Image (cartoon, rainbow, N blue to C red; front, top):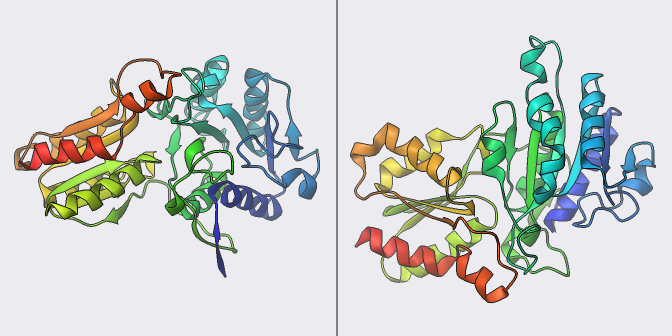
Length: 334
C-alpha cells in the first residue's frame, strides 16, 4: 500500500525498516535523536530503537564520522548525519583518506558499509556557510558513491540501497525538497511511497519527461526547475527531455548518451558550483562519446564561482531557475 509522504518521512521510514531488518544498522549525529534531525530525516527513530542505536553526538564531526569508520570496519553498518555539507571540512580526512580508501588499501579485506547523509542547497537566505551543494567535490574522490534523490519515492528506495551497499555512500538531500513546514518545497517532491521496503538501484538515472529537441540533465531540486521550464518551452513548440540523474557515482552514462543522441542537444543544470564540477563532467562524458553528432554546442547553467549571498535578491540572481533554462534552451534551439 502506498501513501503520499514528504521526503523527510520517507527517509526516516527507510532507515527504520532497515534497522528492524538488520541489528547492525545504527545512526549517529548531531540532534538526530530527541530532535529527530533538524531536517526530520531521523524523526521517531529514538523512540523506536533507543539511545544505543540512535546516538546524539557532541558537535564533533571528525569524532563521530571517525567512529563510524571504526564501527564499519568491525561489521557494523553506521549511518551518520553531517548536518550541513558545508561542515565537511573538519571531517574530510576521515572521509576521503580513510572511509573512501580502506577497502582498496586493505586488499579488499575491509568493507566500509557507511552512509553519510547530509543536507545541501540554498534558496532561503542562509548564506555562504549553510547553502552549498558540493556533491561534485565528493564525486571527485574515488571510493565514494554519490546519491542525490529528488522525490520521496526515490529518497526511500535509494536510502535502503545505500544502507545495504558494502561501499561508503554519500547521501545528499536538498533542504528545499524535504517537505518541512518551515521551508518551501515543490508539491511534486512528495509522491506515493509504498509502505513496504524496496530499493532504487544506485547508478540508474530516470527520464522524468520525454522530449525530442533538447536533453536537460540535472539532479535534486533543479529537476523541478527543469520540468517547469519544459512546460514553458512546450508552449513555444520546443520539446525538452528531462533526465533526473539521481546518482553521480556511478553515473548512468547510457541513459544520458541515449537521450542526447536522440535530441542532439544537451543542457546541464546544476546548483553546485560551475567550475570543475558535475556540469563539466556530464558535458565531457557526452562530447567524448558522441560530440560529432551534436546539433549545437552543449551548454550549462550552474552556480557561478562566488560564495552564496545572504541577500535574497542576490541569491535568486545567481541560482539556476526555470527562466534561465528557458532562455538558454531557446538560444540553443534557435
